[in-house]
Length: 103
Image (tube, rainbow, N blue to C red):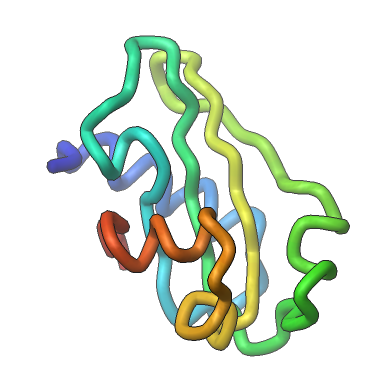
């Protein structure tokens, strides 16, 4: 689980970085699987209908980074909603299996 303060910090960062229209926000990676270390980053996926949908476009643009209140890194990937539904790569497959929907 994710505590309410951490959820609020992540959603606030996404709201600052992603244009209006974001359809959902997901926590993924080690923190969603509960296998994180104390210094693990926060892997966050925001789905937006205007985001890239090409197989290589998603990660080619780089990922915005932010900080949690404790200083750990938030790493944000913004992708089209179809990527979560159809992309077989480990990042998206892991989110489908273990992701925690934050919004």
